Amino acid sequence: MVSRVRVWLNRTYAENVFFMDQLRRNPSDRAVEIHATHGDADSPVLAAADTADLEPEGLSPAGYVEYALDQCRRRGIDVFVPRMHQSAIVAHRADFEAAGTALLAPPPEAVAVFQDKVIAYEAVQAIGVPVPPWWRVRTADELVAAVEELEADGYKACFKPASGAGGVGFRVITRSPFSLLHLNGFPTPYVQLDLVVDALRRADESVDWLVMPRLEQPEVSVDCLTGPDNRVRLAIGRVKNGRRRGFTLQEQWLEPARLIAEGFGLHYLSNIQFRMFGERPVLMDVNTRPAGGLHQLSLCGVNVPWLAVQLALGEDPGDVAPPFLGQDYTVVSGPRPLRPVSIPQQRTEIEEPLLPAVPAPAAVDSVDSGAAQVLPL
Image (cartoon, rainbow, N blue to C red):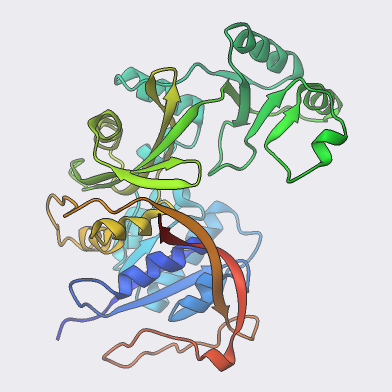
């Protein structure tokens, strides 16, 4: 009998409940036991897991590595998908391997390059991948100078933290004075330049922002599966244009993504994002982790989370091409069940054969977890 595979996801985003679903529905028909940890007792990933723990707060990166190693040893983890403290964890890959755990994450050198967007832009530009013009700013005067230069060339300016994930801290600069007009409707990413400058001059510390032109749609997120030999096994672009989503295999998006994934050794799962600057695609961001929308590739007939777990276990799936490209779709939020207690009282031992853990409807509360479902257009 083939033993079950134990996979751990640490402090991950709500949408990874679909990542977990796909692991359980793997085409190899392998039994998968999923362990999850989080700082929020009501995270839907805790309810969706077979076993779950609350993570201790206030740990240093080194302390978190010790905590993670203990989790892997006690839980018998085969594959660990780290998001929290990824850089510290991958620096101790040998320790995890000694504990019998494979890390589904790139090597520390690759993670380090893409933690800082300035270093990342300089590095990818050196291998021939186009990037937008950018300025690193730490003061109000530097911000104003960068904005004025962009506006002189006819572009709207935006800024985001030089390090960070997702759209956290992203803002678009406007010179329109703050008025009641800005209090109508829903909040937007637009922020008045004078308010930003005033906030910077009153702050007790400097910021570390990247200022660049606002890039245009479409946004294409290329999900890559790369082996430890630095060769990409799978690359598919997910196209976002307003509410409409779709897929692409066009080389104008895939070729630069492969250059980055292979050139920097982005082993296992990475997500490389592009937008348009004028008439050409330019790099927007690189994530050294699986994207929240990775599960959407199931619409193309591929189970990428399972392919990545296979690769981490040394079961190389080889080059994978999607059998088809799914139709256009949109994303909507929906409810996910939560356990009625603050932390799931789950089993520590699961008898073979493993059955997926499905909470009983009468025993759960239904909440909007922020996870997204896909609907065809």
